[in-house]
Length: 414
Image (cartoon, rainbow, N blue to C red; front, top):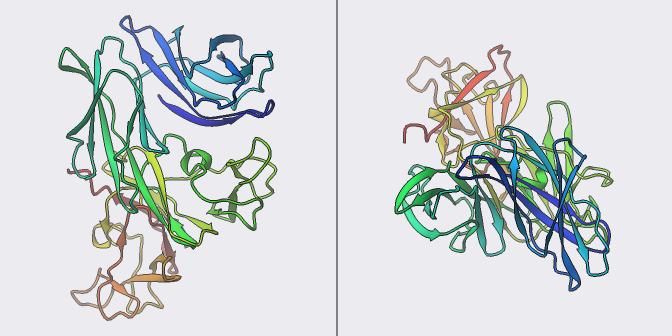
C-alpha cells in the first residue's frame, strides 16, 4: 500500500510536504516500510526524526535518521497498520512540531504516482531480491503499457516527458527484475490532465485516486487566494446541500497551500468520489491544466444509484463512452418522451461558452428513433458523450422507481 499526505511544520518556520510511505518486501518476506519525504530548505537544518506506533496519535518509537529524506524501518509485523509522523530539527536542538500523521499497512507491494515540478514521479515498494526495475508507459489507455522508458536500480523515477496537455494522460507499469527476468509486476498507475477554464467548471475524476481527500487529489495546483471570496472553490453536492472547500494562498502559517473548509478555520475534510461530479470555481483568468493521479478503474462496470431530481454524475474512466453505450435507457433509469420538456435529460457545462449542453431521450414515439439521445432542438442526435474529466448533471423529472444504473467500463474488453 502507498499513502500520501501533506504535513506542515508549525514551529521553527519549516514545512514538510508529500510524505510517501511504501511497503518493502525483503528476501525473508519480513515486514518493512520505506518512509520518504520531501527535503526542507533551511540552511541550519540538521536532520529528521521518524515517530511511529501502532495506535493513531501514539508514537511509541522514534528514530533519528539524520539529514536524509528516506529510511527503511524493518522488523514490522505483516498485516498490521503503523502510524507515522516526521519532525525536523536544527543544529541548536530546536525541533519542529509533528507533521500530519499518515499510516500504512504492511502487505502487498504497490506503486504510486504523483505530480512534481518536472513531470510525474513514480514510487514503489522495494522487492528485496530485485536487481533493477523496468518502467513501461502508454498514452493510450485502451492498451497495456508496453513502451520501455527507463531501467532503474531503485525508486523513485521521474518521467520528465509527461505531457500536461488537457484531456490527455499516461499509464505506467513497474516490473521488478532479477538477472534479466521479471519477478514481480506492480499494478498499473496513471495520471490524467483536467481542463480548467476561467470561472465555473463541472468536473469529475477519470482515475481512482490513492487518497480521495481534496488536498491529496488537487493539491495546490491552482492559484487560490487569501480568503474564500478570492480563492478557487469546490462545490460538492452531498444530496441535500453543497459542501464548500477553498484553496488558501499567501498565508503566514502552516495552512498555506491547503484546501480549507468554508469557515477557513479547519482543513477541508471533503473527499471526492469517482462517481460524482463537482463544481470548481476558479479566479484564474487563463485556462489551466490540473493533473490528477491514481489508477484506472478495473471492473467491468460501475454501479450508480440515481434518484429523482438532480444527480451529479462522474465519468470514472479515462476514455470516452457514447451515450448509446451507457445503458441509461437499457437499465430503465431514464424515461424518455416526445419532447425535451417531458423527457429526463442529461446536461454538461461548456465552460468555454458558459452554457449547458443538453441531451434528452426520445421514447414512446413508435419509431426507430426510440432510445436515441437528441440535441436540445430535437432536430438530430446529440454530439454529447461521457468524456474523461468532465462532469454531468442527470435530471430526472419523471416518476421512476428504478434508480440502479450499471455504467459499463469501455476499457473492460481491451
